[in-house]
Image (cartoon, rainbow, N blue to C red; front, side, top):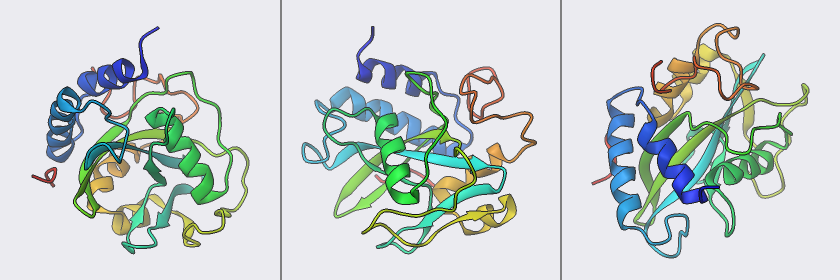
Length: 200
């Protein structure tokens, strides 16, 4: 079986970007992977991988307001030691929303990527995955997380989301019979092969 880094890099290289911003992010991320010895370690280099999840369900799109930045984002964060980016995305989504999610295959499909400032001189290579909530529970973030977590209609999510997320939300906004979060291999997922700029 391939290593996590080989699997991650293969998913990045094979991804068909949604727009110019994601295309620039993809190129930047590929170059970063070529030079970084420990791409997931935030202490090894100011440029590092993060993992996040777009949570969608019958009620729309689940976003949280970042405690420090005050902007509406998808849940996500740093990759802890021994984690893959998708494991980090799932863990962070659970902590930041208090929800449980439908299972994935061993390696879920990468649905988006974005390179952006992480503050303090850090650059985040954010790899994004799709999650579907199990059940219809209300969000209940863990203590210390942003208490501002809620479902948005597709229109409202597009209006409030950070610019680095809008392209993905626009691409995912289609009839639910075309895209199913429980089916990561569905060929209609955005950016699948065949189907602003990173910080300088």
